[in-house]
Image (cartoon, rainbow, N blue to C red):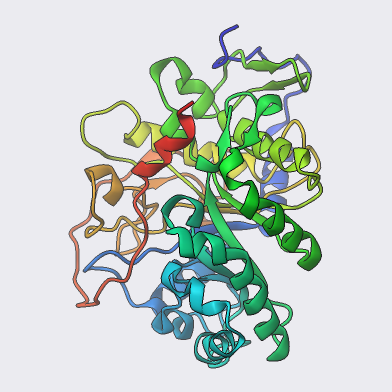
Length: 386
């Protein structure tokens, strides 16, 4: 069966325009739409301006950063925006020591919380993919020790988690067949147990962008298609995003942790790139616009009553990111806050159906800021390998 097209929806299921408008306005008010705020650019605005823009001009209510940049944490003070911050991969071995973990909290949490609404600390980023053996083996002990340090400091409301690329699963294209790769079991079982004990979410970074081909285009972009039927679950999938989330859910269920919450730490689409089929303005508009509506609606076939806290990659186009041209063009906005394209993320764009519109690039302006980091995306090709 062709797995990239789906059947037309049954008659009588269309939503009147007025009702749809009310639905979208309600969803935007109750949404958990976040964005990854990377800073690999020499022309990006000051964090306080970024915080004010997000709060007053967009429906975004949460932000994820790839470090503990104090300028960003100060800039977002009193904004109410929920912040997820990240401890560096290189800090993981030291974080297994309670003294170091306490000092880390004293340096990176205490000066900013609660004025800055830090809701979560990620211990490293994609450690199972990028980390060395010391980082991988110490990941869960570091998470436990940091959790203890947060509790001792009176910050028990702050969750501890870590973000994963989907390189840790196999058979990702068929949810019922998906399993965690055996080589990661020694880490994932205690990690999932930690999430159960602390009621914290399992964070994954699904990228249909890296599964794109002309044959799968509509399936990747949430466009009408015939769908793919999973005989194991007896569920029909009409988009790759849902399929990937349910694949992770099945792998978690096999280990006995199917009840755990899942957070989408990164997903997105490049609006420009070198020679290739996936990057492009039209595809970025389709994917991110449809994603925005989808994650505020119905869940997945196997998790129909769940809403997924979702962080789009990325807030800005970042002109100093390494790698291919596409790496610099995942942003929703230019550094002067004008949209790269319109998908309904701005409050001024709230219509029954967000207007997808290409926007010409503005001239850059420079602020002299030195760039911290966000990670390249090309490595996600791994999870589509057998």
